[in-house]
Structures are given as structure tokens and as C-alpha cells.
Image (cartoon, rainbow, N blue to C red):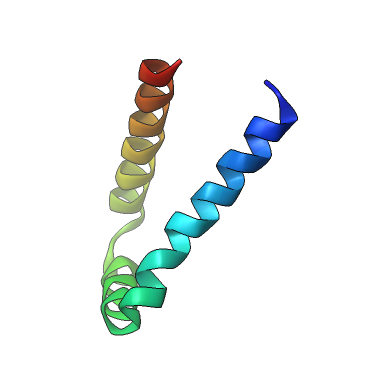
Length: 62
């Protein structure tokens, strides 16, 4: 993997992660408070789903 691609992907992730709190701080805060109420197993499920979705997208793109 080329290091430029890695840094570009990291930068894009940071941009996307920052959009929601920038555009809707109240909505982001409410969503974050709901996440705090989830059990560990539920958070792990969402984390695993996100990982698998990301890997699937990488596989489709490459």
C-alpha cells in the first residue's frame, strides 16, 4: 500500500467524521448520548458491521 493513499484515506475519514458535528452539533450530541446508552455487545456489533462494510467497499473498489 502506498503511504500517500493511506494518508489520503485518513484525511478523508477525518473530513467525513467532522461533517456531522459541524453541520448539526445538537443532533450529533443527541446521537452520541444514545450511543452511551447501548450495551457493549450492541456497540461491538455496530463496530463489526462498520469494519465489514468498509472491507467490502475496499474490495469492490480495488
